[in-house]
Length: 58
Image (cartoon, rainbow, N blue to C red; front, side):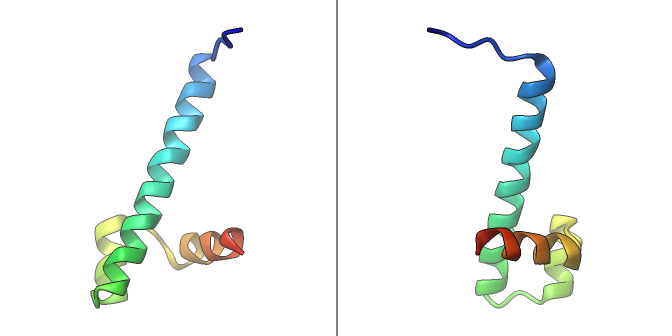
């Protein structure tokens, strides 16, 4: 059975995928010694975004 996805559903999925990719880039940059403020400028993430991500990862 094939499930149809509404355009809104597709956009939400794509947006979440982009967010997850940005968070992964954020972690990689920090692990490679790039300054936190520089990482935040380059990724557009805030401290709150990072905190929520860390909380969701467990």
